[in-house]
Image 1 (tube, rainbow over the protein chains, first blue to last red):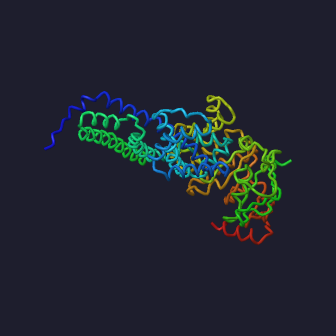
Image 2 (cartoon, chains in turn yellow, brown):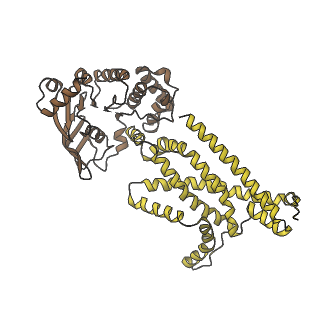
Length: 227
Length: 244
């Protein structure tokens, strides 16, 4: 008969909390970077010049067709090799956190660019036309007229993607970054109480993500009512 | 020199020709009504005037500036040509006040106070000062279109373009918008108006341009147009829309 010892969670609370902070930090940076670069990528894809739109589309399609975990993995292990090939010097290790941040921003910007692109395309063409007719230039028209409306329309989808992103932060265990899951794993290995710790991780993820998706649903209802 | 001049303007969507060798002009202080059946290219023509629709052949010169010239600073040119759209196109996420001040502040570089003072004066002129803190979605179609006219006027335009300004309105709201336009015309504003409102044309137009299949079929004075139109196509069109 299996005996549970939930005390290990309390015992390792500090290391688990540190792990959660790492996860949250990665999440926040990846989210901000993903939305920022995703917006730029979306604008590039919608640009009338092939020289801009084709590479942007190529990047987005490439990233979206490889598994997330591969991007993290490759970036961590291959970038130093590539850098040393080009510079002739031994590639300096950037560390798992920096490397994970870059990989996350790259991948998330590809995902967010598709959301932003759909959001921009949901705005009637008369809106930018009216902005241009007032004499606003491209960036002013985007910044004051199109994007604020587009972001409002895509807010629910963006938040849903954010929930997925938060769950995906646990993938960094492949580069031995001590996130929340990593911290729990470590504690589990040390104490042999891996089941308790994994259940704890699952419950925490469930509660956070459940609350977040609930909030998204309520927001969606409010936005629909405000229309 | 006319304020707006179009010389042999042609435009194609792929192999379909939407504008076919269009030549006309609008003098300073002149009101020109452009009419014609739907799909005749009149909306495309008026949008070409401020560069919202590119064209492949011919030349459009507004206040001495060539619209089709790639070197032309289009935002600068557009800032001084007011445009009113069929679907109003107020910015729905901004208050009426912000709708009126955005262009003035961002494009003309006016201060917020100056822009607001100007905006409120024009809002008062179209009879909607009490609505200044509302959002476009809270206004009726006719009210929105009047705000849109005030927004265009807030930029101190040298000419105004109207693209079917009353087509999306319920019948009872058409007159409130037309009244504003009539007043504007009588003050001497240079206007190019795409519309089916022949009452408006009779009242204030100097000239009427009739289009069909991308061509300018008639370009004559108002009296000629309503008195003795020469083309059969224009006569058919008139008989159709004057009946109701």
